[in-house]
Image 1 (cartoon, rainbow, N blue to C red):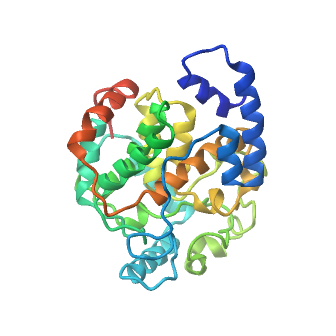
Image 2: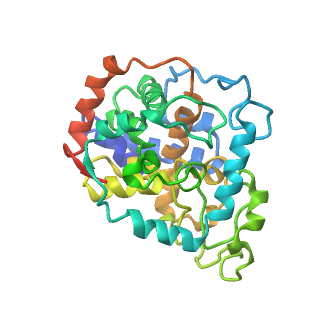
Amino acid sequence: MGLAVDVVKHTCRSSGDDEMWHGMNQSLAIAASDHDEGSLQAARGFMTAFDMPKLNTFGQAFRNYDAESERQAGVEAFYRQNHIQQTFSFVQQMRSKHLQLNKTVMSIWDCCELLNQFVDESDPDLDEPQIEHLLQTAEAIRKDHPDEDWFHLTGLIHDLGKVLLHPTFGAEPQYSVVGDTFPVGCAFDPAIVHAEYFRDNPDSQNVLYNSKLGIYKEGCGLDNVMMSWGHDEYMYQVMKSNNTTLPPQALFIVRYHSFYSLHRSGAYTHLLNDSDHQMLPWLKEFNKYDLYSKSKVRADVEKLKPYYLSLIHKYFPNELHW
């Protein structure tokens, strides 16, 4: 049975509904192959309580990187640096530097609070501290998926890898922590935001890396693909190494939620294997909350804290190695 079904059963009160879940899995696969968000929701039987806004907090369409706004110039400058610096060699260096998980020991909630002092320079839609975005995402998911507490918690923790910006972790520059992610070791796809700046990336001139497949094989699976370095991969590794009991879908979402050229534009599908295709509907479902929940309406942190602390206790150890 498909992984998309397994996670629904993980949250279901009864195990006697296998036929219903099997039928749902077939519908999910059809919706995913059609890249149709409306069909996806219908296939799952979702009742959408979350009202997706049409404009961001600056009065522009979401993820409009060409719109003139107070953040546009800074966002474009960020992506120029990101696309020049993120080479295959750079990613290897950053993995070696950070994946020993020997920088500190702290809880999930401590990490949420630590992020409150940072604003994501790559985001054209919001200039609020990160804890606001985390709670906005989690609460939007909670409205539409009230019984899937693993999904609520995934919304809360998905950006915690941005803690790499903190001095404890070496105060990494934003180009190596935030922004859209993409494979390295193969050609950079034009669907990546501000792809024009890859012309100055040394890998674009390296014959090992500048073909469609590069060092990879078709259908090799994303688990075998080196992604640009950032908060997605780091938090995925933190979760995995600290033995979270969240379902596989949660780890997939955290690891690839910034891979917009895949889940929004359909690029790099030639690298996916069957497991990736089964996971992709959950990633797309998550994306609408991650993207469209960004708002100037502040979350009541103290009111929400007890609920999310209970989920953290359910799915994580008290303290984690970072």
